[in-house]
Length: 257
Image (cartoon, rainbow, N blue to C red; front, side, top):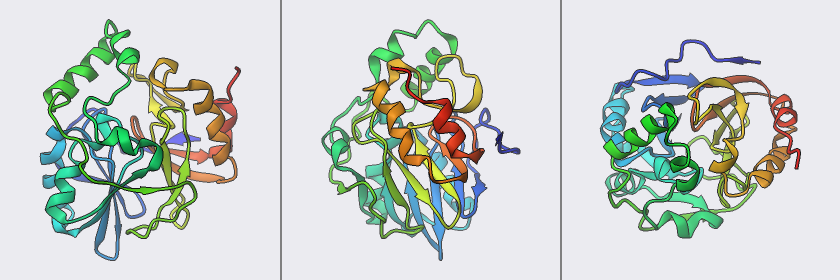
């Protein structure tokens, strides 16, 4: 099990980094979002905060594409740091936004974050800095997704990359991961992260800190649905890519409750 080398999550920049086969990452530390590329077309996976749009527009040009090349925007869940510029790209590219049915209503509301879990730990330097970055990048601006299509567990989305939906409720009711079996890639959203959002430390894949989850026990139990995937490259919502056998991750995060 190892973190993928050559990945710097502490330097912002407009260039995209190839982090897996046909999957690009844009560094808006500590908030991750990705582009899946297939046959010249693109799927945007999550969409940072509104202020990250310029990083996106600069980065997409750095890999030889334009915004009109985006065919779809797919969201792992309806938190503000994952859907900030989704609606803007949807309108500019005439591309649909997709989200799990259980998070559809939340995606149309503003200020969707685990506020108690964040504000109760604002005395921690890393958590405070993360909130400050969110404020600078528009967390309090209005950016709901005006219209979204829904998917369900086990759906194979007809978008570039053909991601398989794995419903992993717990962080939110509609939290999902997107599995790309032909590439051995799992984009985990906030079901699994490799950075502790209280301490800022990098580590092995873990369920987010308990106060950040709607239902921490369910978040851990949901991971059993990943146990048969085997060796993967995991691309988290926060932290660095990780490579290893996902079964080890499931066992290490098993709920004690």
